[in-house]
Image 1 (cartoon, helix red, strand yellow):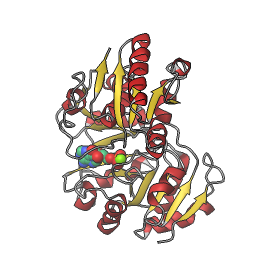
Image 2 (cartoon, rainbow, N blue to C red):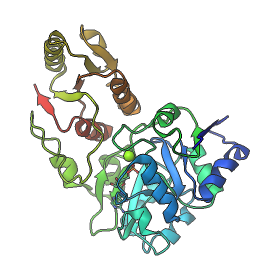
Image 3 (tube, rainbow, N blue to C red):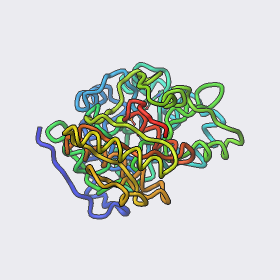
Length: 353
Ligand code: AMP
Ligand code: MG
């Protein structure tokens, strides 16, 4: 398949003439990758089971892993669900459009091919003007998982999408780099108590404030990254998450101790003849004398760390690093999403110093 790439003239004020072709492809059951504020999505008509199947083929993803349906307007939600629970209403009002996915009981309109056989459906209303305009023009909800090959880091630029999807999909809509850089927060509001299934830019603190009480995290998020220096299977996670080609270790502790531990381990591996990467921050990048040093962003601006996270991991894959040692981040606010992605990428391998 020949993958066409169009570059948006203005992502903030998308030209609907430019979006007509991708919207038509989507409506007719084809695949189009497009930017959202979180990561690039691989879109297909969420109401068309055959189209959803093509997503799984292009990504090489197991077909019982459910997809998120993306909508452009509040009115688009009701046909997809049988009920909007109170907690869902509050969260939608506070955070839609935005980086929050909510899980509702599904209506019969949504095929099981989209929900991986579940009776619930995940729905998000992206804030990105180009994504929103494209979905509105397509006139159907758009299933859009991250536009990467299953097992690679999520794409945050159109070039990342091109690396994984060239030849497999009809079109890539290039809107430049995404803003946030990690996938949406997922909150299940279909049960008795709302629960965070995946942390993201809508943080636990933000959701709790809106709900007026502390919202719980899925136990798999909490119990995963705990014990120092052990490498258990990702608990509660059915599918293997992205893991870098290199052996990634997170080092946690006060900055001085972390820098010195990383330098020591880097030196040992370099002496043994390995290619070693170091993931550090703008504040510490001068403190590492050896290895391939990449700053993931500034500790004073955690948004920058989320924004660069997947690009840095992709770069180390391309550089064929054997070992990567990474600094750690706080586990509150946006740090919760950052540490969730980093600990998964590290197979929960954390050294406390
Ligand atoms: P992605 O689209 O790549 O950001 O990943 C979508 C994720 O959303 C899946 O891996 C699921 O964990 C989650 N998800 C989607 N639909 C549901 C659902 N109905 N119930 C629970 N989790 C869901
Ligand atoms: Mg994904």
